[in-house]
Figure 1 (cartoon, rainbow, N blue to C red):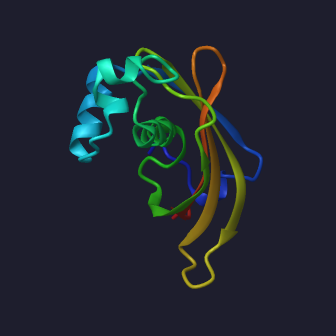
Figure 2 (cartoon, helix red, strand yellow):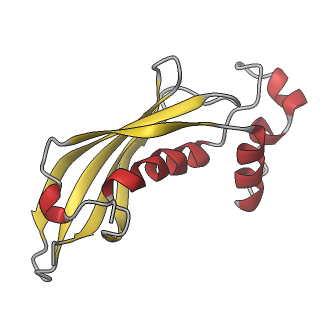
Figure 3 (cartoon, rainbow, N blue to C red):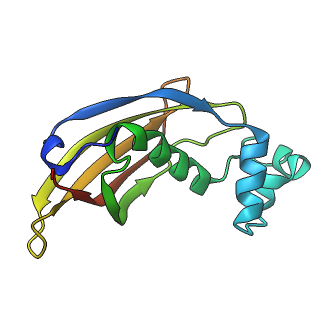
Length: 149
């Protein structure tokens, strides 16, 4: 499995995930439509032209999903039992159509499960940046991770 077990996720370990991903108009439109979000800022180019950014903004929940998704192959693929929650999620800069997102992940905390000896809880900090090096999303994610068999 590509994912890491609890024992392999030491506090301070950092992953620079590759490849990055360029966000397309289709990505944004499909995600926004699938989640029934009618915000014209994400869907209507004419409306968006008259906003402070002058263009469509990518749905921030798509951005969060992409940032976490880009981390999975290096961290939790096949070794996570499930997400426990997301904290301190921020979007300090907007994502626009055509932006390329890159992600780094750092293990910021971990502990053994008190009730189940076959697992542990890991807190990841995910940071997504655009092609200009601007942070577009950061979050803390708690995950229940398998221990090595």
